[in-house]
Image (tube, rainbow, N blue to C red; front, side, top):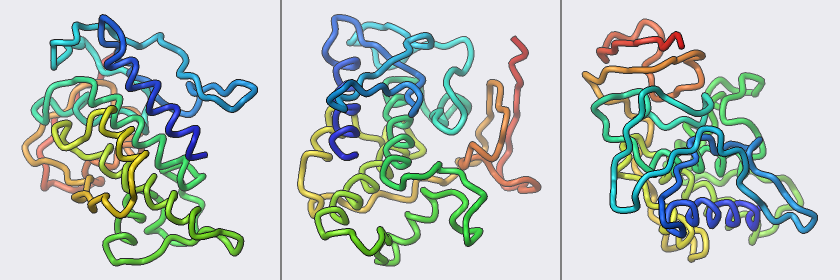
Length: 226
């Protein structure tokens, strides 16, 4: 699983840095990762992709694009930061988290309510210095790889685009020593005073939105009917 994750990271890095024009995929998710007979991953489905010059840092979009549960928050929050290649980094982080946990990030069929949103639960576990259970047959190498994948994923899903690493850095982190990885900040803080744009759909797939009835954040939601 780790080799597949690393291969996907390298593929996205190539889209961002290896072409004359930068390619933003905007729909990185499990369904768009294909495996060949050697289990080499291929990034597929470029229907939502956008090209823009490599020297441009921000891309202009007329509407949010992607799949709920993998879409970066800046696609909705107007003032959190411009939309850029960091949106793909966020999507990869959500994908990497699911690959590490072998479950959907949002799953209501769990033993404890705190485990419904896996990234939040695992961040709390790591913050308290707890180990993640992997089963009785897990060896130390497996635990090390799991920890590395989760820590890198947590860096990728930081709320602000500027706090996320580039895909080049993501590859370096995955290839590097887990002991050199720092614990990232909590990635789920919802900025106050932010307005939201785009078709929102299922709110429970957007953990950085406030829960129902929470008035601590002022949000204006504009539903795109097109």
